[in-house]
Image (tube, rainbow, N blue to C red; front, top):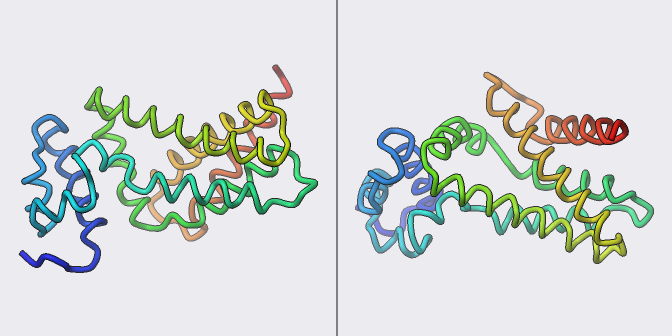
Length: 190
């Protein structure tokens, strides 16, 4: 096994998701993931402290992109417009690998209570990052929380639609922004 081949992190994520979907999270070992990815166990642990962390691979980057988009939104942007800017920046960074992984990841999460809990924590982390970025813009806390939660819901809905498409030239962002717009419209009937 080559120790320092490029793309090891992505290969580990792909291998783990495939194994989780094929044989279940509980029946998958770190050794199996490393073997399928073509790396050693020590290389696995260089990237991830344990197999649970594979689910949140990229969360730090996603949070950073969301916050950057919100921070860089025009000063007169409404809270939801700022969230849209964050969602667009984060969504534009997601490519074919993210789309390809989606259905398998969804199946693996559905089959494991532990992964469902981890996925929920990931959503909480995304909402917290957006809330804090909105508060830094001077948005009152209740409004920041609501806008951030709508952002997380829009991201999930847009992503769920995106991964079902056979072919998509436009990328994730249009689907997420369409979901955010629909959610904003829905709030007017509350």
